[in-house]
Image (cartoon, rainbow, N blue to C red; front, side):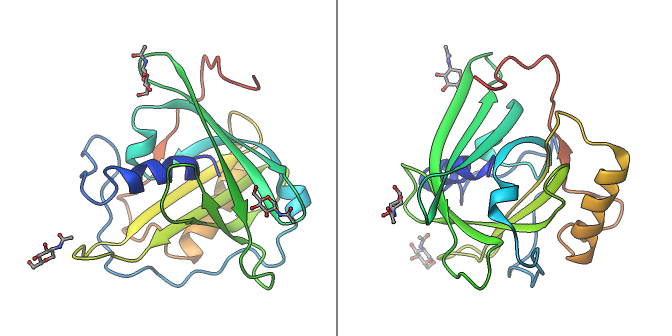
Length: 202
Ligand SMILES: *[C@@H]1O[C@H](CO)[C@@H](O)[C@H](O)[C@H]1NC(C)=O
Ligand SMILES: *[C@@H]1O[C@H](CO)[C@@H](O)[C@H](O)[C@H]1NC(C)=O
Ligand SMILES: *[C@@H]1O[C@H](CO)[C@@H](O)[C@H](O)[C@H]1NC(C)=O
């Protein structure tokens, strides 16, 4: 749940108002969250641990951050502790802690994540993972209030600071199967810089 923690910041602050700049990717245009198929019978124990953010949809809470990582640890029988860490563009290391849980035990890949300053829990759905190399996470919130565009977030995560081509292809497969990034040739994904990182494993 690397960026999930930052989702709350979005919700508290500029989620629904701040336009994503054209610097990376392109903004979403969906007016309704798509139907997606998540990883069946996600094994939480195998999924826990440390992940690196390899690609993401541009989002305001990870604006200009590099070296983004997420660490997931079992907090108690029902909750997982989420710690997201990154390096901001001024060089300072930023970190946020939240908790995740599975509201429906029949859908173990569909988490909700709550951060201290967020008013509502944010979806964190694992579309696919092999546990040891890659994961694809998707989050979509239908338009709220007068908004007409759904808020979508997506990440490709890797156990390592880079992701080998074969696993990137597996991740792409899950993204395509679920129509998460539908416009051919115009991906919404941007690369997350994972070089010269100082915030790993503090
Ligand atoms: C687990 O931790 C969460 C978050 O701190 C808390 O809300 C929940 O009540 C705890 N559950 C149990 C069974 O201790
Ligand atoms: C650096 O940027 C972070 C994230 O935007 C901010 O929280 C922090 O206050 C900044 N630190 C300094 C020294 O400007
Ligand atoms: C939604 O639109 C109505 C009608 O234009 C307006 O009065 C209201 O303030 C808007 N609400 C928000 C939250 O922007």
